[in-house]
Image (cartoon, rainbow, N blue to C red):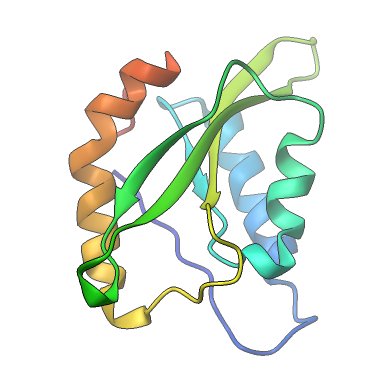
Length: 133
């Protein structure tokens, strides 16, 4: 599974644009399913741009590790983009259920492991091809 992580505290330097271009390239290559997570739910430009009025089916949520032994939830929504011929590329966009809670960076490795371990379950629930492994 390929992982691309884009982060930085400075605004206006092109993180959202880079993420959109990387996502578009991945979708064009069509190598299985694509999962895009927007962990900055307070400024969710990326999520809004990707699935505005293009939701497919119901969203689902999965538990992710958090401090205080409480689990947070990531919402996953199937969506699509169209290629030049009008054929859909399906992919999944995820974001934190609670937009006001900052995700603890020390738990990021556990988040990645949780997503990888939950992939088979949410692939079936969202009716998407397997993520690359």
